[in-house]
Length: 140
Image (cartoon, rainbow, N blue to C red; front, side, top):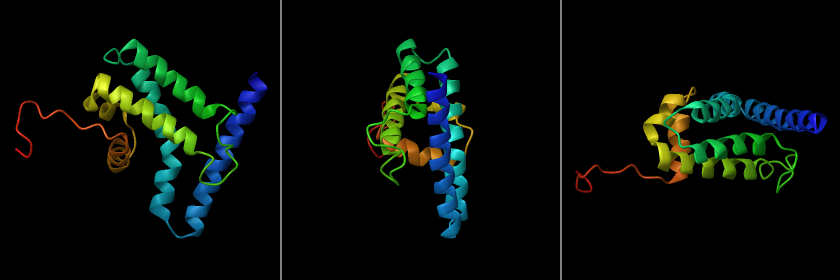
């Protein structure tokens, strides 16, 4: 089991590094920097949220499941397929984050994010969770 997990981690790291190199070769340094820090920041986010007492127990289970899913060698789409390979991991991460946002709130998620706030903002837009308007009329 440990050998399989280690192989999976090496494969994910290889795809991740390949993506960084491709972005650098294409001259997209800021995108490469964001991509390089995304997986570690996502792992830190999920870990921090799983330890936060404001996050419900069921959500913590999903966060741990998400970390295992991302590291798992068993994927719906194999990791070595460019672009599409990591797509199932991204979908799982967004769905879990959407769940946590609904249960614990945006402020809790923002508190645990260690990366660029603009990257988190883009990630939160993908979840399509709109913040409550707290009794204010729309647009006001």
